[in-house]
Length: 72
Ligand code: HEM
Image (cartoon, rainbow, N blue to C red; front, side):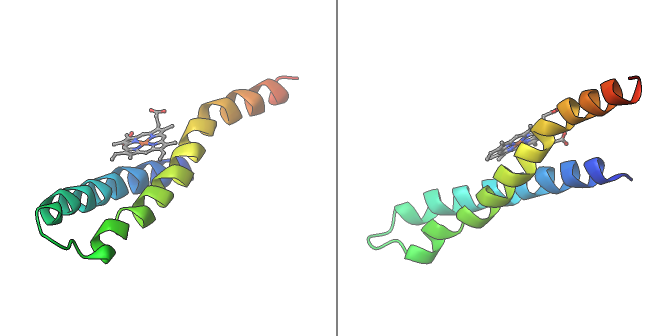
């Protein structure tokens, strides 16, 4: 498994974790005083998704760029 695949799998599984934290937010919104820590829970996975997602976005362009440089 190469580096890009690892980042893709990480992005994939963190997205499931992120989804679970969003669902947890909907679950606690019904309460009178929703606990603040639950509302902050999605921020860590969202930050990880942002950076791994930007990496995944750049991969095809970096590959083309490197390919163009190799063939001169
Ligand atoms: C926060 C900013 C995010 C950015 C910049 C981002 C960007 C990307 C990019 C560029 C790809 C690869 C597309 C491709 O070349 O095929 C990708 C794949 C994916 N993203 Fe995100 N993403 C973000 C957030 C999320 C979120 C919030 C979710 C879901 C909750 C998510 C779920 C996925 C999934 C499931 C894939 C496919 C992974 C795979 O190929 O196995 N992403 N994302």
